[in-house]
Image 1 (cartoon, helix red, strand yellow):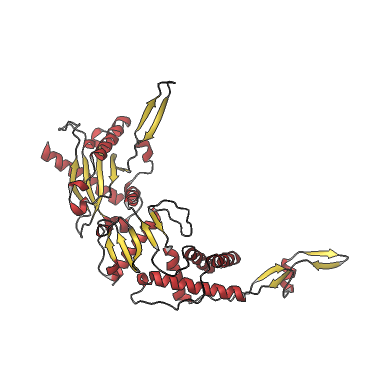
Image 2: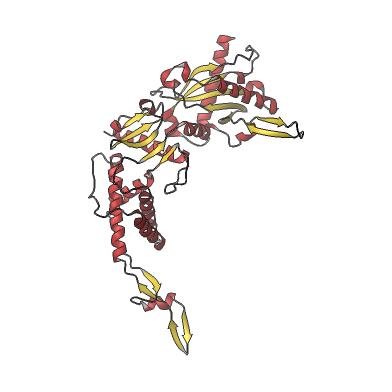
Length: 408
């Protein structure tokens, strides 16, 4: 069962989320609070959805190794692996049937193509061609491409066949010796020489795979994922709930320089997400904390986080005349596994010692702890989802109203 390869990050010794290999066996690590399906079919869907989120929210482009973020692990071009496997199942190993011609002074001349494509010159009344269209001898090149394709197919099944098929299957091991520079040169040339869309996608996928290979055919050093899921959790929350122009709500400080009397603006405090609903503003801080799993107070946001949220709320009320003090709300959004229950759960309220709480305290002075089902967010995320925005707004408002009735 594919389920045996899966676990959540709370079950591992580190914070990695994604696919990696441990002692030659695959390990799929989901983020905190993700409820992994037991059935293989659904479990595969879980894995592909996780891969989709990782690729989208890390801005990773396959074949591009310029990403220097040490928290992003992208040594497995998984879309290329998937394409190679599917193409192999549909078409088998690559073979070249196309006859190619090049402009050259040597070789078997095709006069019809030469007359159509080459420029003739007149010399003493004679038509002279300096270059001809000649048939290129593709035997060695095509044979090499076929062998490189077999190598790529073998690598794909060795590393990811378990993800696509219920039965273990491993094609014939390639006889060709791995030579990275030569493989890439041949594939890049083949890519540049064809306009066939299928071949171009096949060659590009092969290039992406070869770029990530080394001299040893193994699965020990390949992975796709992140060493920290916090930034993705933040981006997911902002993607689903956030406004596009949140920068205008950022509070700034200023420095008054005594020496020259200049006033310089300092860097901004930046809330993760500004959500709006029915004219009200909700300042959300996405916290990838484990309180939804442990229920330990130490796994809730610290005082400094509460202070920043209250500062955000106060700044918005004071700087935007159209916003009333009771129309700004604060909340931390943390992951949990709802186990088929409510996808949103109110669990806590953060208050500050320096605030005098009473009936007239503004809503933004209370920072709510809200749990959001991880699987639901990852599998159903949609840009600026109005339904989820409405549900979260209702949860925040009704939870705060109930809390205030009990404590004031």
